[in-house]
Length: 262
Image (cartoon, rainbow, N blue to C red; front, side, top):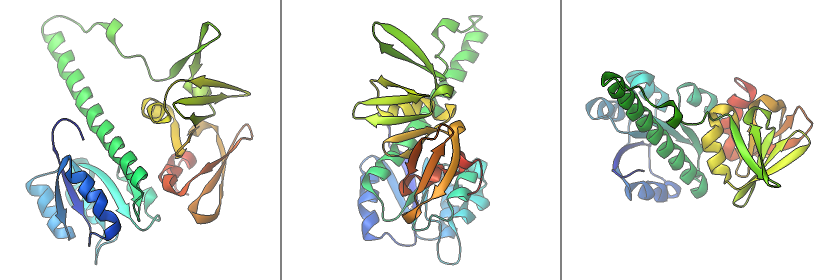
């Protein structure tokens, strides 16, 4: 997932045909260890912890959550749940899982999960390096230069008509993908920005923008109501009356939208 080969543990009662391609995709860049039982997974985690773990929720006699309880959430690697059941999504995110994938695996959705893991790993490494550099600078008597500090992820510049309009992310209602651009919907206006929706999601997830569809982000503070639809989808009603759709592949966003169990 980055320059070096990460170790990945895959816990599944059986590698079904629709998951073989996903495992093979992982093998291209990672050292993959497939483990068929809960007890073996716990033993492997204690002996040689991996960087990432794919957990099947429902195993014979036990659950993937038993692995986390045995090891302790604070000692677990990054976790992605892969399951045929969407009933455990809330609990998965309670243990800080990075993602929750439903079988049969969707190639695009799986790629998104890997990208999320890659960014999480890169972010953790970057923060760790930043802390080490700050400590070193302090020890040498050279405080870090505030002018080089990253810009807070709470606003975005929009070039329009020869001027730059600064949009606060807190004011954005929702975001729609427009090929290599995105439209930021702010009240009765919309602003076109040359940036992909994946980039916007990555930059402003902590500011409250959550992906609910492959082409839609929504500001969680603008959500008024969630209405169940067919096939596990939801209609998302915003305070301004806008109606959006949360697709089945993004049900994991429900806890953030609702502020708890749905």
